[in-house]
Length: 192
Image 1 (spheres, rainbow, N blue to C red):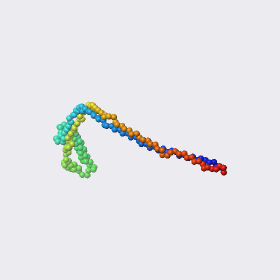
Image 2 (cartoon, helix red, strand yellow):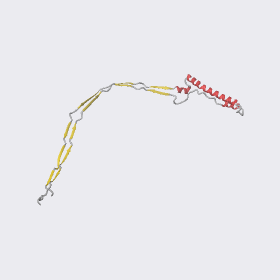
Image 3 (cartoon, rainbow, N blue to C red):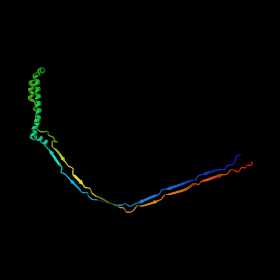
Image 4 (cartoon, rainbow, N blue to C red):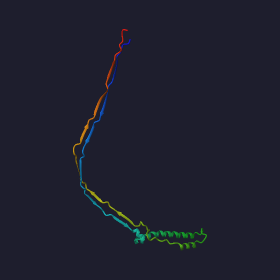
Protein backbone atom coordinates (compact mmCIF):
# COMPACT_ATOMS: atom_id res chain seq x y z
CA UNK A 1 0.00 0.00 0.00
CA UNK A 2 1.17 3.39 -0.90
CA UNK A 3 1.14 6.23 1.44
CA UNK A 4 -0.26 9.52 0.20
CA UNK A 5 2.29 12.20 -0.64
CA UNK A 6 2.19 15.96 -0.69
CA UNK A 7 3.00 17.68 -3.95
CA UNK A 8 4.86 21.04 -3.67
CA UNK A 9 5.72 23.27 -6.70
CA UNK A 10 7.43 26.63 -6.57
CA UNK A 11 7.70 29.48 -9.09
CA UNK A 12 10.56 31.99 -8.97
CA UNK A 13 10.07 35.73 -9.08
CA UNK A 14 11.07 37.82 -12.11
CA UNK A 15 12.27 41.39 -11.52
CA UNK A 16 12.20 43.94 -14.38
CA UNK A 17 14.76 46.76 -14.25
CA UNK A 18 14.66 49.72 -16.65
CA UNK A 19 17.30 52.47 -16.59
CA UNK A 20 17.54 55.88 -18.25
CA UNK A 21 20.82 57.72 -18.61
CA UNK A 22 21.39 60.97 -16.88
CA UNK A 23 21.71 64.10 -19.04
CA UNK A 24 24.43 66.71 -18.63
CA UNK A 25 24.49 70.12 -20.34
CA UNK A 26 27.37 72.58 -20.15
CA UNK A 27 27.04 76.11 -21.43
CA UNK A 28 29.85 78.60 -21.40
CA UNK A 29 30.37 81.89 -23.17
CA UNK A 30 33.52 82.40 -25.17
CA UNK A 31 36.29 84.25 -23.45
CA UNK A 32 37.60 87.47 -25.00
CA UNK A 33 41.13 87.12 -26.30
CA UNK A 34 43.29 90.08 -27.25
CA UNK A 35 46.64 89.55 -28.93
CA UNK A 36 49.10 92.42 -29.35
CA UNK A 37 52.25 92.08 -31.43
CA UNK A 38 54.87 94.67 -32.08
CA UNK A 39 56.38 94.88 -35.52
CA UNK A 40 59.74 93.12 -35.36
CA UNK A 41 62.78 95.22 -36.17
CA UNK A 42 64.44 93.99 -39.34
CA UNK A 43 67.67 94.94 -41.04
CA UNK A 44 68.30 94.02 -44.66
CA UNK A 45 71.45 94.58 -46.69
CA UNK A 46 71.09 93.99 -50.42
CA UNK A 47 73.86 93.85 -53.01
CA UNK A 48 73.88 94.94 -56.64
CA UNK A 49 73.96 92.08 -59.15
CA UNK A 50 77.13 91.81 -61.24
CA UNK A 51 76.87 91.06 -64.98
CA UNK A 52 80.00 89.85 -66.82
CA UNK A 53 80.18 89.81 -70.65
CA UNK A 54 83.01 87.86 -72.32
CA UNK A 55 83.34 88.80 -76.03
CA UNK A 56 86.82 87.42 -76.66
CA UNK A 57 85.52 84.54 -78.84
CA UNK A 58 83.42 87.03 -80.84
CA UNK A 59 86.42 89.25 -81.57
CA UNK A 60 88.45 86.15 -82.52
CA UNK A 61 85.78 85.35 -85.14
CA UNK A 62 85.58 88.95 -86.46
CA UNK A 63 89.20 90.09 -86.79
CA UNK A 64 91.36 87.35 -85.30
CA UNK A 65 91.37 88.81 -81.83
CA UNK A 66 94.46 90.05 -80.05
CA UNK A 67 97.80 89.63 -81.83
CA UNK A 68 99.10 87.23 -79.15
CA UNK A 69 96.10 84.93 -79.56
CA UNK A 70 96.31 85.08 -83.35
CA UNK A 71 100.03 84.20 -83.36
CA UNK A 72 99.44 81.38 -80.87
CA UNK A 73 96.63 79.96 -83.01
CA UNK A 74 98.73 80.12 -86.19
CA UNK A 75 101.70 78.47 -84.48
CA UNK A 76 99.58 75.65 -83.08
CA UNK A 77 98.07 74.94 -86.54
CA UNK A 78 101.37 75.19 -88.44
CA UNK A 79 102.80 72.05 -86.87
CA UNK A 80 99.82 69.94 -88.02
CA UNK A 81 100.08 71.35 -91.59
CA UNK A 82 103.82 70.67 -91.73
CA UNK A 83 103.19 67.08 -90.58
CA UNK A 84 100.55 66.63 -93.29
CA UNK A 85 102.92 68.06 -95.95
CA UNK A 86 105.77 65.74 -94.90
CA UNK A 87 103.40 62.74 -95.04
CA UNK A 88 102.21 63.69 -98.57
CA UNK A 89 105.82 64.20 -99.82
CA UNK A 90 106.82 60.80 -98.43
CA UNK A 91 103.85 59.16 -100.13
CA UNK A 92 104.74 60.85 -103.45
CA UNK A 93 108.36 59.66 -103.39
CA UNK A 94 107.33 56.17 -102.30
CA UNK A 95 105.08 55.85 -105.33
CA UNK A 96 107.93 57.09 -107.57
CA UNK A 97 110.43 54.74 -105.99
CA UNK A 98 108.15 51.66 -106.21
CA UNK A 99 109.29 50.53 -109.69
CA UNK A 100 108.20 46.95 -109.22
CA UNK A 101 104.49 47.79 -108.89
CA UNK A 102 104.30 50.75 -111.27
CA UNK A 103 103.69 49.71 -114.90
CA UNK A 104 103.43 53.31 -116.14
CA UNK A 105 105.46 56.38 -115.37
CA UNK A 106 103.90 58.01 -112.22
CA UNK A 107 105.74 61.35 -112.53
CA UNK A 108 103.30 63.05 -114.99
CA UNK A 109 100.30 62.09 -112.81
CA UNK A 110 101.99 63.41 -109.67
CA UNK A 111 103.00 66.65 -111.46
CA UNK A 112 99.42 67.23 -112.60
CA UNK A 113 98.08 66.48 -109.07
CA UNK A 114 100.49 68.99 -107.50
CA UNK A 115 99.49 71.72 -109.99
CA UNK A 116 95.74 71.27 -109.51
CA UNK A 117 95.66 70.70 -105.75
CA UNK A 118 94.09 73.30 -103.49
CA UNK A 119 96.36 74.73 -100.89
CA UNK A 120 94.83 74.36 -97.40
CA UNK A 121 94.01 77.70 -95.88
CA UNK A 122 95.17 78.33 -92.39
CA UNK A 123 92.14 79.48 -90.40
CA UNK A 124 93.18 82.86 -89.07
CA UNK A 125 89.85 83.69 -87.50
CA UNK A 126 88.01 81.84 -84.77
CA UNK A 127 84.81 79.90 -85.45
CA UNK A 128 81.70 82.02 -85.92
CA UNK A 129 78.90 81.04 -83.54
CA UNK A 130 76.04 82.70 -81.79
CA UNK A 131 77.41 81.28 -78.53
CA UNK A 132 80.69 83.24 -78.79
CA UNK A 133 79.47 86.00 -76.48
CA UNK A 134 79.14 84.65 -72.94
CA UNK A 135 77.02 86.51 -70.43
CA UNK A 136 77.07 85.56 -66.75
CA UNK A 137 75.24 87.02 -63.80
CA UNK A 138 76.27 86.93 -60.17
CA UNK A 139 73.44 87.66 -57.77
CA UNK A 140 74.13 87.58 -54.05
CA UNK A 141 71.40 86.85 -51.55
CA UNK A 142 70.49 89.77 -49.32
CA UNK A 143 71.50 89.60 -45.67
CA UNK A 144 68.32 89.85 -43.60
CA UNK A 145 68.39 90.01 -39.82
CA UNK A 146 65.17 89.83 -37.85
CA UNK A 147 65.34 90.58 -34.14
CA UNK A 148 62.93 88.79 -31.78
CA UNK A 149 59.78 90.61 -30.79
CA UNK A 150 57.15 90.33 -28.07
CA UNK A 151 53.64 88.96 -28.27
CA UNK A 152 51.21 89.76 -25.45
CA UNK A 153 48.03 87.73 -25.08
CA UNK A 154 45.19 88.81 -22.73
CA UNK A 155 42.36 86.36 -22.01
CA UNK A 156 39.27 87.53 -20.11
CA UNK A 157 36.77 84.81 -19.19
CA UNK A 158 33.18 86.04 -18.68
CA UNK A 159 31.95 83.74 -15.92
CA UNK A 160 31.96 80.16 -14.79
CA UNK A 161 30.35 77.67 -17.12
CA UNK A 162 26.69 76.75 -16.45
CA UNK A 163 26.55 72.99 -15.78
CA UNK A 164 23.17 71.28 -15.40
CA UNK A 165 22.71 67.63 -14.64
CA UNK A 166 19.46 65.71 -14.87
CA UNK A 167 19.87 62.42 -13.02
CA UNK A 168 18.91 59.21 -14.68
CA UNK A 169 16.13 56.92 -13.51
CA UNK A 170 16.02 53.27 -12.47
CA UNK A 171 12.61 51.56 -12.38
CA UNK A 172 12.01 48.21 -10.74
CA UNK A 173 8.93 46.24 -11.60
CA UNK A 174 7.83 42.84 -10.40
CA UNK A 175 6.95 41.04 -13.57
CA UNK A 176 6.16 37.77 -11.79
CA UNK A 177 5.62 37.16 -8.11
CA UNK A 178 7.05 34.09 -6.40
CA UNK A 179 4.58 31.37 -5.71
CA UNK A 180 4.58 28.08 -3.79
CA UNK A 181 1.75 25.63 -4.45
CA UNK A 182 1.12 22.77 -2.03
CA UNK A 183 -1.27 20.10 -3.27
CA UNK A 184 -2.58 17.71 -0.59
CA UNK A 185 -3.01 14.09 -1.43
CA UNK A 186 -6.49 12.85 -2.12
CA UNK A 187 -8.25 11.46 0.88
CA UNK A 188 -7.86 7.76 0.91
CA UNK A 189 -9.62 5.40 3.13
CA UNK A 190 -6.93 3.53 4.96
CA UNK A 191 -9.20 0.99 6.42
CA UNK A 192 -9.94 -0.71 3.27
